[in-house]
Image: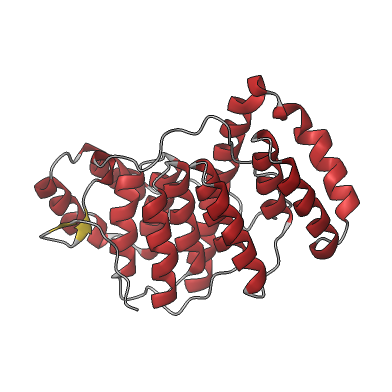
Length: 269
């Protein structure tokens, strides 16, 4: 079955128009918060200073308030960027949560001659859409990566789980968790951290118990993991601590996004 992104386009370039104007599909959740991104994901690279060209590109994109101006920026500035600077531009827009501009640059990157389907780029975009509760668009990207010949890995599934939890879609999150296991991938510390923290804050103790049992099957040191999870995040189960939890989630993910961009640049240089 052929699936396509249900998004509008800028005629001149084929880029996605600002999805910020469309009504978000889900209200801000009051009972579910995404768990802390405190998994043992090792840094892929150390942060580096953006080039002048990348900084100017980000600035120009943010100032462009019409389709014609965006066309001009893409044609006269982004089209001249080196691969490294273009990926830096995308990562910086993601870091600043400029998801509507990041979508446009993501589509631009996919049209570059050097582009090869890359799971990490998709994961970063799914994460960005998820934390902005653009769940339907995140689902579409998750489907689109199949069309590029990519097979979702643990992180891709985990990002979709997080996106569903941000929108309080617990059933969909658990369906995706089961799909992760059925695919042959294994949930990792980050997967369990997000699910246990989020479902615990929502009072879904039965599901939390199931997940804790799964830890014994999929994690090397399940008891140590659960003990550390309780020590680090147990206090955040109280309502007054939930905003801190959410902010920490965003900060952790920004770092992952920037590391991913540089890893891609290094591998393709």
